[in-house]
Image: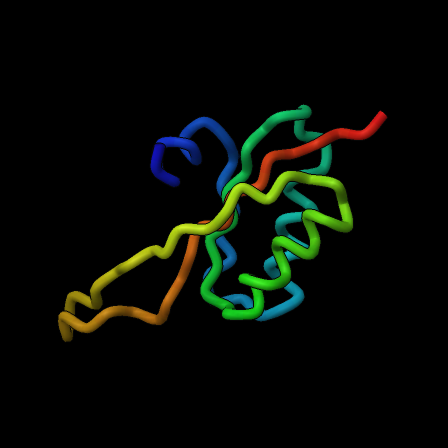
Length: 95
């Protein structure tokens, strides 16, 4: 299953263009109130997010499911845009 397949079943937070700590803050806001087991996808291009998301998942007891690079080509030049990735997190609600 690809990120696209799984993210279509759950919410997507697009934080591309934002720098740390904004992507994690946006993710934390989006997770609030979601049911247990929901898979949420964070789109981000800040390199720090690759470390921040797994650490945040450990701190908050959510399941980090991994990341998949997103490749986009600039139409004007044909060159790749700055690296971005889709980070998947499964919500774990503690009672």
